[in-house]
Image (cartoon, rainbow, N blue to C red; front, side, top):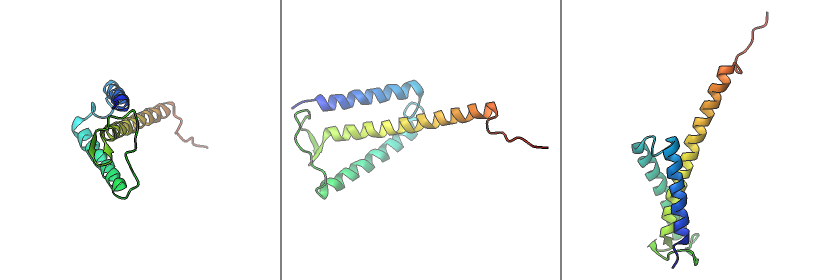
Length: 120
């Protein structure tokens, strides 16, 4: 039994939390909305995994880097934490890119890049 993979996922999740905290992207911008969105995303992915397991598409497999703890048959605990990380990463990327694009749009508007010129 090894905690290497779970440790890496938790370390990466801590990085997402720091990035979120620093730029107020998702959880640190509005924790109520983040709880709903994150919960729905996690539930959707867990249902997806359950369907894949049920139809024999997904299987746990063996790895020396995993704990061996399963929250359900063929569903290792690492998968749950990875899905939490994946949803957080996605929302940080989405809100960060949306903020960047808004900033670039304001910068272009301030320089007059979108103005049309009248011809006489």
